[in-house]
Length: 298
Image 1 (cartoon, one colour):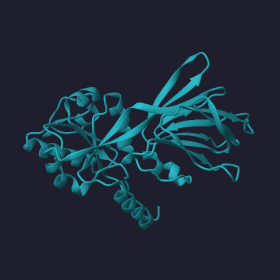
Image 2 (tube, one colour):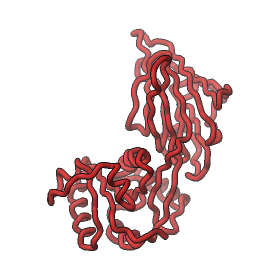
Image 3 (spheres, one colour):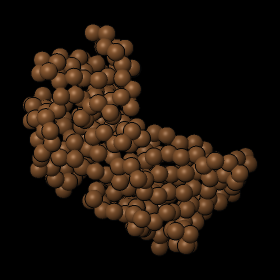
Image 4 (cartoon, one colour):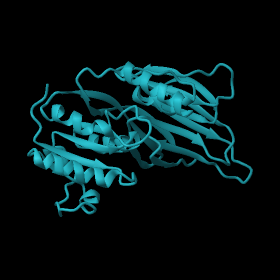
């Protein structure tokens, strides 16, 4: 049980056709109940009313939670931004066809909100990974990942050899198309498609899943969440002399890796904090979403 909610932030994926109209309806609904709504600049500029925009830092300081309208991708992006500002809780509202992370479907929003605004909700804390790309003689470039960090070959690269070490101790070497390092949350994303297991989100571990390994014995590996992983990448140049190896974070951020760079991944001190209705159960969500997946032929 949380305190009564008097201020929320609203984030939305404006690429969704129904997002602007839903946002306008939501703001009117919240205002009629005396709940202040803070908007980021990109949303304040497209909605009527001329509301002053708020930064993520201002929303994190003032709002009791953020309502995120979109899908899992929108929620992942919001969670990374919120983690930098103390991890303000996020209520995900699914406007897409499939969502493991979002709590509500669009049709449920206005029936579920009254109870949530009364403080009848739980906080589901999730591990986040911090990824650092190291180059000799230069500061590390850092990213946060709620789902996964993926190192993969490009279209012109040959097989990658990846050497994995944990806390400076060699673990295993893979040859294949790449590697997925995921949180338990990310175990239902790319890792699952690559043959990895599903982990309960409260498992304190980091999942390492090879992508198309060029051996019969390579299997996903679950390491302790307290360990710091190092990935060293070796790839032979392709037929045009190019070395195409990319690092992506939550399939939303990243860059190409240059020869000689290595990657470090560890659990971040920050956490993603998700608003859940009381009685939320991961296995119920898993059964429902996998059944939807089968029905839609995905």
